[in-house]
Image (tube, rainbow, N blue to C red; front, side, top):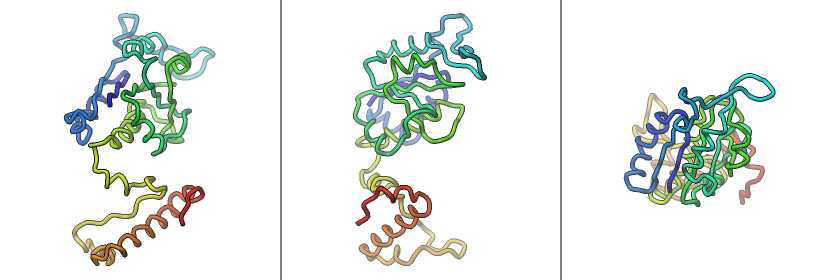
Length: 226
């Protein structure tokens, strides 16, 4: 899969794609990426990419000309274009799975009060929110989506690990423990060191239910438990 990122701050994006698991995915050619600096398409010598909003109000808005030109440079109208925005559709694990299907995704990183609505109307296929809160960096919200998507691609992470993660079966993931078995008086549950695999699976499922009831009871309302 190719991921193309349009941003005012390429250095934020570059660091992510050259680190950790993503770096290995790029090295194995599972992921290809391109970072486009929106300022390279500005029309004046000051590389201006934002302006005051029509109708008044606080903040600045990303101008349509440089952003539209950046999108045209990557044939944006022929690609799946994603814009992370607080006013978008909620992002979920299922949504992430659907985004693994296209061969290329193009991401717009917003800033300030957002981007000119005409860019959304003309280019954007998916306007997505990562949660009911506002952050200043479109790069961070974009990378949240990128991270959720690329790790689902074949060959990035062991499939067995993905199956047991939160939301894979509608429940939150069970607690994990590792060595030492006794840490400051707190011991690993006996069942996990019993070697009885059926009882371990039973315990883990019970812990999933307990954690989901405690932290995300809304997930249980639509879940077929038995």
